Length: 78
Image (cartoon, rainbow, N blue to C red; front, top):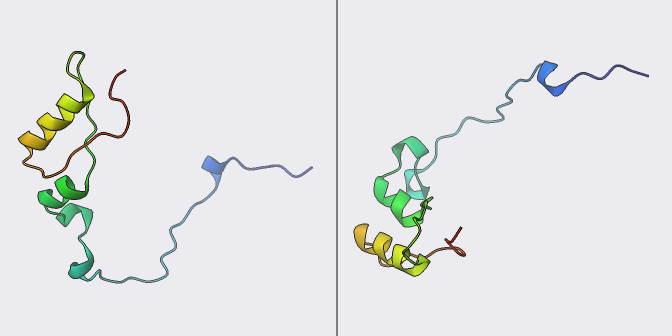
């Protein structure tokens, strides 16, 4: 029976098929992305305290960040 090598013992190398620049009309590199894009298209990981409802917390986030839309994906109770 052949001896198997653990994945962490194997040699790994990065294969780059092409180096290309991204057209700025189609987005940004993460490190160059404006904060407004993170807010508009992002997700906020929120640890909701006991007491206020999920709806209340979503409304607070909407008001604090001056957003037109905000919501939650499922219950924030836990």
